[in-house]
Length: 438
Image (cartoon, rainbow, N blue to C red; front, side):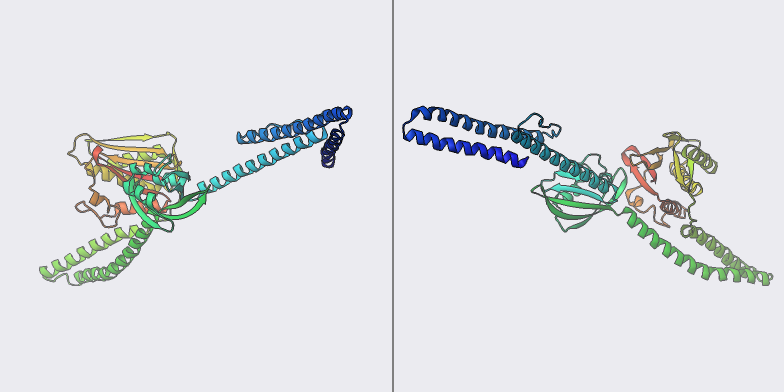
């Protein structure tokens, strides 16, 4: 067909050239009787060639206009056309189909890469030198606490220092930054690379949450330290206690001063052993055995237990679980220790003298489908200088407190694959602990 098309085209050109030569010949010889009809034939073939080229040019122009508007549905008719016109139409239809397939492949690859980006645990941000955001993934939005991110200026609402760092960070730089949002204190590490995208220089930021990493290292350090201390104390105190008891039994007739001294040594030693045993709980939490359980019944049972241990008539406890059939996959016995400890701490913080004491327990699912249990109270807000240390083992502000309750709670949540965080609101006079079960 292609050969036939070229044959027709060249035939027209050949006839046109022959007519030109013949017309010129008769014009030179002034034989006008032949010149006029040959000239008419020459004009006819010239118009035919021009119209054919114009029609094909219009077809090409229309095809590109349609492609610019993402219209790949049109097709040029080929039935009932001349061989030349048919070949042009079929060629343009084929070009359109190739371009359509190429665009479909590009869209599919784009969705594939976007799916991969949203599956990684690293936040990705692509931005130009003016701070315009080209692309982000879900993890980056979660880490920054945003739902839509189009320009670096939006970060000023979260933290001015965060905006400045991301706006000015350069390829090859590494930064760590901390700020506070609705999730509590956030610690991020940022790495930067660069590339040219659509003839524009862009930076690619890789953001990682180092909260869990820092917590794990801190907890592991405390566990190792606690094990060493309890081992050394037990090895030293146990023989002293045992020896004092033996001496008391052997020398029952000893004078009162000696007996009193031995009894003090024995009693103090036993108290110290009991004290050390309580800290062993921090390093010997059993492996969680998770099961599914309903949050509503679980929380109501914890409230009854907390009131049984510490009942203040001036304190109202409310429970809200949405939806009512919300379930959690965790070790119910271990989590009960955490929630019960938070409720007792909240009741002790409010005390018996504060009027209209209120404890609120709220459970719900967030956008990431994680289950959150919040325990809030309207007692005195924890000062910032104390809030930074409340999860540190042995740290306490209570008289006679051991400083182990919140440390054990954090360890239990860590072993359960979740987390515990403090979220204070001094303006609203609220202290809230948030348990997160992913």
